[in-house]
Length: 179
Image (cartoon, rainbow, N blue to C red; front, side, top):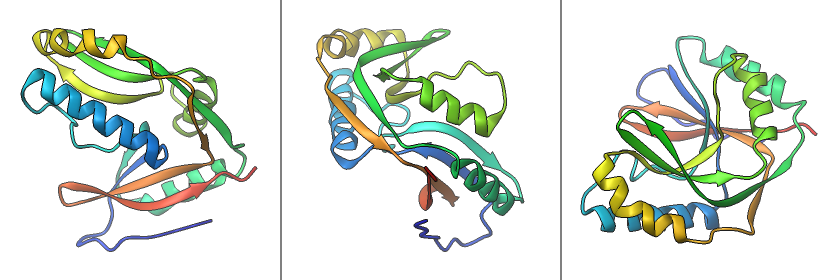
């Protein structure tokens, strides 16, 4: 298992567990975020965040116990391909979030349910633009919904863990699947 533990100013008390796509997909997402920025004419939530599929965040003093728990669970996970296709929208009151859609959501939901053990409404996705006003949404959605983003996929064989270091999230370690 590859581990690259970072040094932080204080003990790590906040972790972010995610699935990170490879560079070529992360680059596509960065370009799409730039397109949204151009179309709406200003910054937006998470514009500079790297492409990822969120699983969960942990805050507390027992980070090593949480990492051990996730490592034990991940030992039973099998690698699978994540297939991406086009874009969709989450509606949250007056706000809109545009995301890259995942065709085969089930394997990611299964990982989420094994780790989080909550019956939450979890939709795996890669965020493009988060919490847009209706006005900003209408400026960029016609462009994005017409884009054909398909035949893209990547192998998911690990969970990436970030740690909060001050105001930034930094790579902490990768937890590889066991099968």
